[in-house]
Length: 374
Image (tube, rainbow, N blue to C red; front, side, top):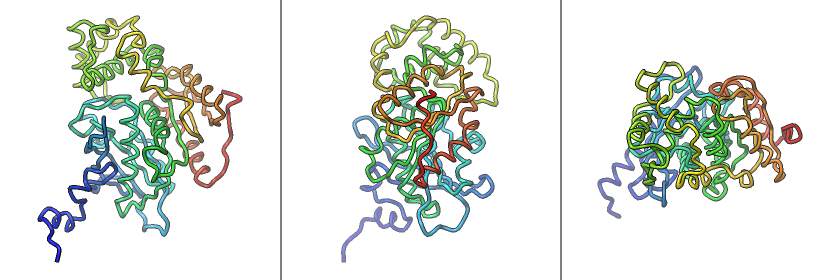
């Protein structure tokens, strides 16, 4: 009779992965059922393994939601929901928020029979600096969440998936699509949808018309990148204002239903003034890093849907349209949804049409190509 270690026996008894397997990217660590869910929805808060810089294993978090129905004879279709900017501090994880379901447009897909996989990304909900708008780390965390969801029996998640995100999550969705075939050949990407996606990071930080939102998002990026990679901020702000940047990022999560505190407002105004006329595209090493983590239009596979409001003050519509035209020039069809709402409602406003479009591609139908009118 073979001998098993006590740890291995406990792992088997609890239906957990053994230590050797537990650190493989895409392995589920734990799935805790959530009590407060929308009607007809069952959900789990999950922890799973992904890989960060240099392939280092990192335990991260997220949510998986599925219809509260009997397990179907065939695996369910999956939509990976990639969230917009909630902040860069550990406490800002969407899965920790009591407003998670109300703020998550992707939950609408569960009512149509999909499994929604909603990763927090690295560093939100886990004690690691969040790599804000860092393409490869984020895309890998999304793909590994889709893998991990397949280990939850009640979800019945399949290997065919679409990815859909808004704002920062639009950037995440496009990077996920770019990496899917090489990083996760065991999964099949069906379609990609991005609402108000940052694509050219320096241009988006430069051209957004809301200077205060621009200052906060720039603070998130500078804090994240300088902390993770040791980049000096001396070319961007003096030492006193560098401290303000770090405090803004460490202490603030994005909340659309609460007014910011006075200290936050004053900090944002300070950084808006300090960075007026500064273009990180021309400040190294931030410029090179922003270009490396922008979305390469030649690498994004189709089918692709982009939803963009012409009144968006945070993600400049002209930058998104330029990206879509570049995708079209390489022969990839684009479904373009033109909207008139604000940035914060981009995904909600386009959700019905986006979910319909994703369903058409799961069914094998060809959706309209809007390249001629973009």
